[in-house]
Image (cartoon, rainbow over all chains, first blue to last red; front, side, top):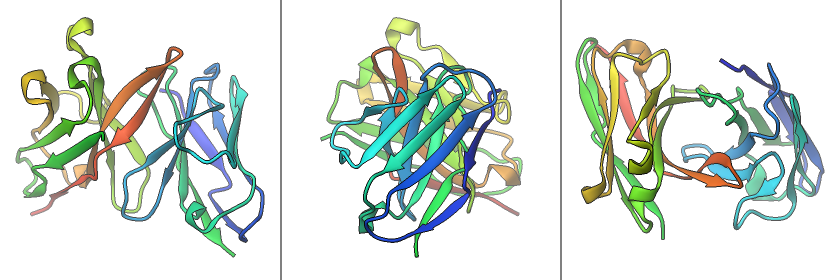
Length: 107
Length: 123
């Protein structure tokens, strides 16, 4: 199975900050990389697929980049609703494994 | 509006069985692959199983941790997908989400999720 890692595991930031989360795959996955946001007690929501394509309805302050093994999710200006846990997921090969998550907290 | 609603969760003893259902609405259910994803308490996300559509012969995929114990099925006439869980273990305790699989430009992702169903395996 492809192993996904994320850094940092947790992050404290303030409203209006720009933050970047990194995801790394244990082998090359092209751009078959998705990002999800999960708020406490809620289901995950798709933010980005194919490494950089914004899902419908997702604010443009979210962006993704990367290819092969290294990927990033950037939030350009944090809003109150952005404080949540973020997961990357590879969809290159089965099983479609997730990273362990990055918990974004308010400073 | 796309909706996915899980049901059937609850408390079950180790070695027991449980069947989860996921009722879909607001889209052409038969066109889509459907997945089950679980989240143990305070933990991350794990893909459990997938069932493809009729065009792909309803083929299935399973995580190694559940293969041989869990079965994913679907009934397109009822717009529903199911997860039959047998020989349950305490480590299967989790919230189970059903998710709609979609393709965009050849890439696969889960674009809609249900609210989740809690399964607790304990004596």
